[in-house]
Length: 147
Length: 248
Image 1 (cartoon, rainbow over the protein chains, first blue to last red):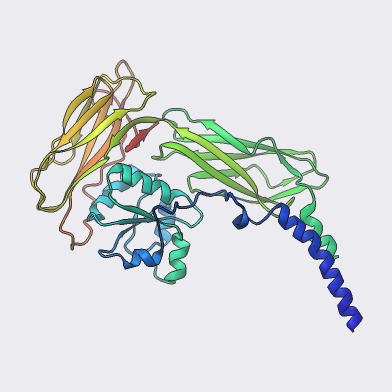
Image 2 (image 1 turned 180 degrees about the horizontal axis):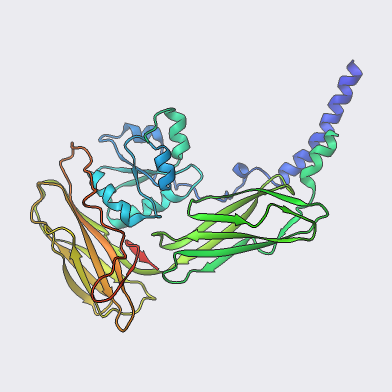
């Protein structure tokens, strides 16, 4: 029995060597120094806990596609994306009272950053990016979804 | 067997792309910017393309088929929908295939030409703020031809825009003054750029709004939402243009 276990351990160790080499050569994306997606810059990134402490509450902007927004979004969030920026901007203006703005998209997308930049250029005041994205919201508030 | 299984990732990639990065020049006014990534199966085994994933809903990826024999060439078509985007665009497409564990990453770059910038794109009066005039500045992009003129109209009679030319044919200020600031209203300002000759006019949108009191619910905007820009304008047919930094 002991011998069988020893042989199994040796086989496992042998198998791990090339696997480790493969990992070293092509590490999973999250370990890459330059991930292929943009991330929020520290200067305007905000955590969910920070945003939820603000008073008055910020206006949340959902920068995903209309289809993604319609399948579920943060309650009270307003859709604003670059697919149809001009058509959606009036909806944002009707909801905005001059408070801080927090933009999110999927955690792996760069749209929130682009929308934040564009909102600032358009005349909005303080605009932040929630880097946790839609997935981060869902993880913190499971089931709190508006459709 | 375990050894053989774990060494699989070490096998050299069999799917060889002619290029993994495409820098495409966008034609002014183009709704879609296409790119093609050609590949060849360089190994001795057939390769199955399992899936493709783009990091934006604006990037459509299509394959002609999924299984490729050794030596066979294929193509992945990427179509980037411009929408109301402007400026530099960088998108990635991840292709999962049977030849390696990690996806092949294809990079798509383009720059949507900026026709004109409108800054700010919206002017806002808070509730009961003094109804003083505010301005938006329209300025042509460097590569845009000089205008014959710029006109502005509003879809709301409570806000009449007045255009002042700052730099002949290139830079304008549009001044708007609300008649009141006690009730919410939203005006869409249609800025029509006349290019002269037989070139179609270009339309850029800006907005002016009076905010309701801070503690009121969001205002339905159904009646205030403008139709998508692009409806014909007099005297020349209009070409829809995204605003803020209006592109294309």
